[in-house]
Image (cartoon, rainbow, N blue to C red; front, side):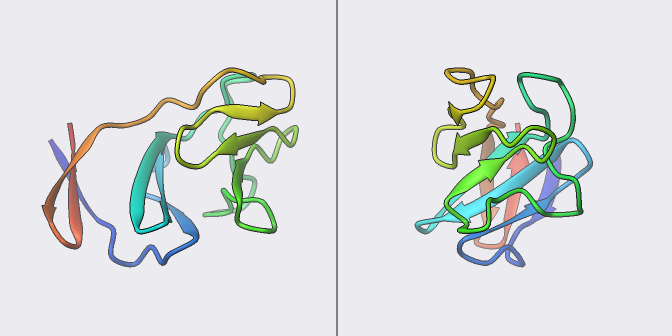
Length: 101
């Protein structure tokens, strides 16, 4: 199991945990996803840690602008509508650290 410190991720922000996974903190919850667009299989961000749209309301694929719900990973706009980001299951080790299952 891999452990990651996530207390640096502020409310309404996202950050890479590795090149392959990222986390978003929203509404007091943490969401962790595979960093891969279900449409093209490319990384979502163009610039490091830029996973959210300009309003911080959705995860965005920088390649083609697809929008994903933060809480579910569902694509709600773009060529992959109805598809989902791959959620990564995790457990809290302590208030600042998660363990990926």
